[in-house]
Length: 222
Image 1 (tube, rainbow, N blue to C red):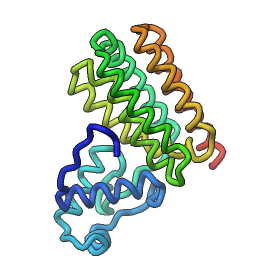
Image 2 (image 1 turned 90 degrees about the vertical axis):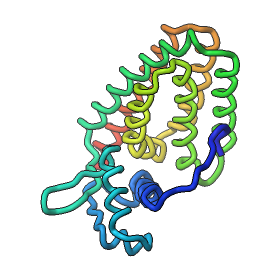
Image 3 (image 1 turned 180 degrees about the horizontal axis):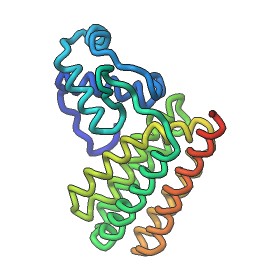
Image 4 (image 1 turned 90 degrees about the horizontal axis):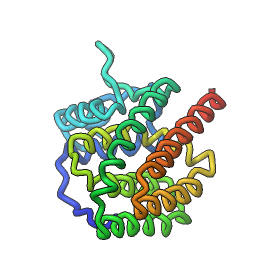
């Protein structure tokens, strides 16, 4: 469990949304696959209402789309979408980091380091890709939170949710985990040194290279 996270009871809608989201992010539901409300209601033993609400939540996260007279479908993987998502991440996340660094306390930096330590400890587990995604964003979020810009942080959270399955593809087929671990350590060091320019430059490269790796893998798969 990531430190500082308190678990709250889930509603039926949250339960269904989390379960379907997990299937999409793990690749069990692939881009273009239909999501039938009746079948999902039966699978999760709920009525159609929480299923419909869950699908609307996932549509807002960019993980599925509704097509006229056809229902809901998982969104397709595309190079153009990857570029757009990751370009937006660069703009918003570098902006947030630049504002956060001057406001970071030792406690903020120690909290980020604690998350990074937990992340490193689960790298050798059998489910490391599933865990890595959660810890990756928790680490980045810990660095951005001191900026105290909740609306921007909400947008960043949504972009990371939409990027998650692309990142999982990268991790499954490249040495991305070890590279990210090294870059995270370097990024934390630059934040401790209050080196805003170097930290933002590293973050931009960190995100840009991930996007190009994923696009390259997608091209090979096609």
